Image (tube, rainbow, N blue to C red; front, top):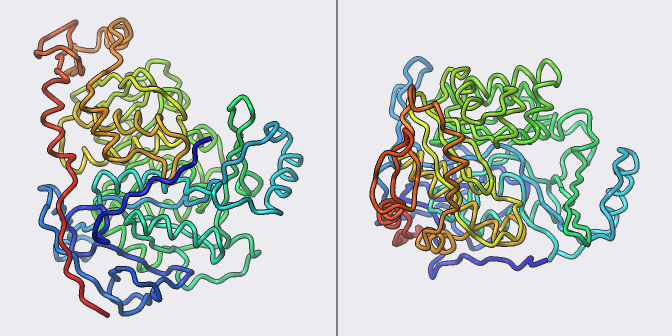
Length: 484
């Protein structure tokens, strides 16, 4: 398996995101980074030290000045949204190993198997950043200013994760400020996910979260001031179903309510956990319902949408979820090799997938989210947003593994320029039949001119690509560093 690291370093040590007066943030890290000769910015009042650096970026996208006005909650001034996207929880280290056979199905046997693996840590070449790191890295490589909110332990795995995030220009905001450590030592360690691959390239996954009755970090009971500041200064807060493995439903609901309060858009991808959460404890069901009600953007696979609505038709399932949400603007349905759709109150936008040689689909959905966020922030047309997202997912599928192996910007641009999409007229005709009476339907097509077809407006990929490419070019940067 190819686990080669992708290096994305520019000629100057500036992080890969766009025009923000606070380019990097490291707060409340369990490991001191301030002894290193790296560039950091810290919120006032934090305890991360006095190192300050300023970056002045001479390229600023027109959507980077999101502001929040919310006098109801005591914020009388505009809040500048310096972060494009912050991820919540689900920070882990994936350890990818080839094994003769996948772990046993029985929970006790599986736990013993994992403990045996953990007793002898494998070489660092098998480690990779996982979980929400995939989304954050993908977003940073598209040029977004990103933060990862979560917990990592004070050991070699936590150090590794912090190093990866720092190299990618992603801020790390620790959630454990002034936490009372009354639990077991394991409760404070970095989460590990063992990604096991058998000789037939089948995957098995195991982590200690699989065997815990409570979330891994159930000792976290409230949001720290640093976390609140990061959420308040983010345009988007991204959460997924695996966050319930880290954080208690009560803390998750507190986070949702705070994001709504301060005008931060919520993106939620329930993932495979959505089905079990919908049948879980009363607290889990309540937190899931809070997400479904208050998320601005919901992202699901067709199977996940079916599991939450009981509807086979992904469009009808998406429309149902849209109606149920009080704040939902988009429902995004991922359909693998067929493509993806965005459903709004008035429109169904559809984009076939790009044709690529698929090596590994791990991380495709995570990186897809980053591109949807990119289009949402920059107010792209729906079909253009899907085009970017499909390209990012396709580029990730061409590599092996996730983390630092997710799509690079160069790979995404190459796929978009190739403009080779997997059109399946029969599939799209069947999916969209009878839906044009109430919705405007937009379908991406190879055709050179826009036209109507079976109730759909065909949008030419040849017209979309020239509009996208300038938006995806890396910004030029200059830096102005104030020495410590």
